Image (cartoon, rainbow over all chains, first blue to last red; front, side, top):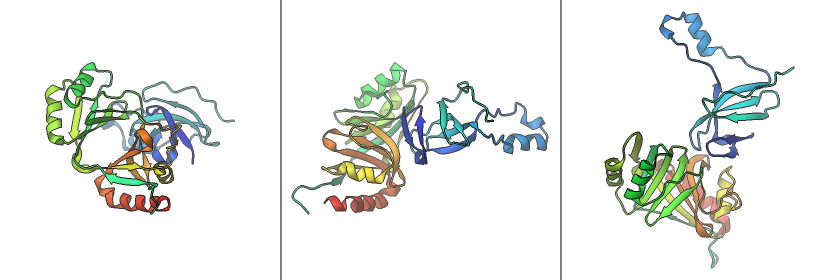
Length: 96
Length: 173
């Protein structure tokens, strides 16, 4: 269990209040109707499964109910940065 | 039970509850709320304001919970709709909410047992409010003067939380 700083509530809260909402920065295809099933399946299901600093979305379910982005290390679980929806992701260090 | 009760819990009936959403930076929204319910919308995260019969709690950057004593929620909603303009949402949620007032010397300890949130007065002085996990249910908790707290939660949890609070407070009398 860890604590996450909610950028809307401006304080660190228990992980229990949050829900994980998947990998961040996956653009929705501009023309879904002209895509093949394979391409659509790729968009829906295939994720990077990144080792190291991973950009992901969280929602403060039991608090302000807002979404935001987190840069979290999938090896150490360390939360490196928290940033708002629509903000540019911070640079990440690549795992060796 | 000892002479000085550790925890006192009572229901706060007869209040109207509304959920309001809108642009926090819009002076028109703030003026409309001031005019109809007579309270300033808090802009600081996790705070609440109190004026006469009305209370306004910060829920999110564009969302507030409003409680008005002795008024009908639908009537307040209609009055707000009459004066509000632009992009907003106001919903009467009176029927879905129960509010409890928790007071007494050990009220804070009961909260600390029930939630992962830090309810110590150092972190949660009067004027603060927080939506959090409370006994595994969702609740809005607000700190009042004199170590008292208001807890607002869904009506469907009322029986469960009443029993939880009775059990959690039993050791303090």
